[in-house]
Image (cartoon, rainbow, N blue to C red):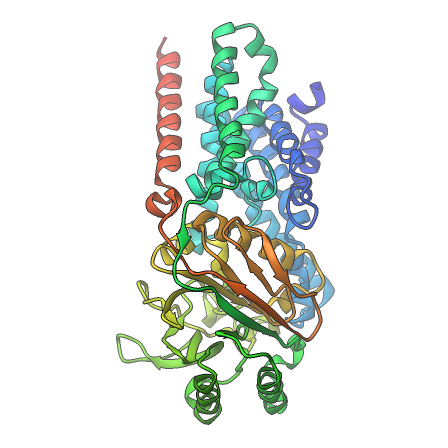
Length: 506
């Protein structure tokens, strides 16, 4: 116990190991009780440290968490970015170390301004508020990286019912609060009032999670729709090869022509790997085919068009043909994958910064949903599905959720399964069906409770068949987003700061 709470490398090593447990709480392992252990060890380790040591302790935790949980970054940089193993390893470590700085900031702020050692319940509530604020900051600043949020661990756990109420944010808050209260149990036992309040609070939030787990917040709208999702399984190193263009277009055409008739036909991200205006003949043929079958075919396709300033820009897009209409231009771009920050300095440095799809522009805000068979479809391309607030804004105006992706960037790592889990959480938060179509997996249909009803194996060329049901109505999370839970966190943090200032004056 003393090793954990005191300054020095043994405590930092324990924090690093505690952080590295985080991926085990998420897909594909789903050992959700370890989330309480992991967060609890960090909270305990920050109990007695000065701000500088607390920052180092937090950084060690964050470094372990992201090193274990986002190791797939190495695969993207080395396998598909043509970087040497040494350079790919260095860039991955740099990426992980930078993300660890968020936890370092949290450790410093906690020890400097927020820690209240003589008030175990208030201390736990403040820590949970800081944890949530940290996840929110990480999901927003520098375009955001909302990966490995603690709340995802509860997709199949007892707190899943809280997702439609306050999103993944509320679940993260409750997990951090619960972990801190367990660590403070000895202090709570010495105060009957604080203990009673803590037990009541835990009973309410965990009981509410169980009670609302299968609650229907939305209702059916119109008839169910049959779905055909095509998984082409095209190797990433062939994806943008001009010599492979005709073969790829023929593959998706032939798989679709031979498939069963359905209401919706879904192709993955950039299934048509040329600009939409240069594929007019191909898309016109698909339009006639889909219209003859009374189907809507939705495909990923790059789109080039003039922006509001009249400049010709390139966009990662989605287009609908047949019994539907609309284009969608991706708004949340992946740094270095779809655009290069400071590109005048970085392009040409290594091949990874010169990838053929890394000059996309950001699509405009407030785009209309896609229309398919008379239904509004919220479109999310790849990385966009990991942003809870952004996805909720899209979902609130739609009857169905759609995410298309090309997860070959992850190789055979756990990245695609983490990505799938986040899509499941978006469906649960919105109370809507989600269609997920990918190039090489995981292609799946997800019901409004976050459960997978149909899925294809990874790394196989296959067609998925199933049904989805358009839904109407708004969950509490779609109505209010994360404002209530973040507002609560801000109040708790403000109260803690005022108490700290008052105690320093006294």
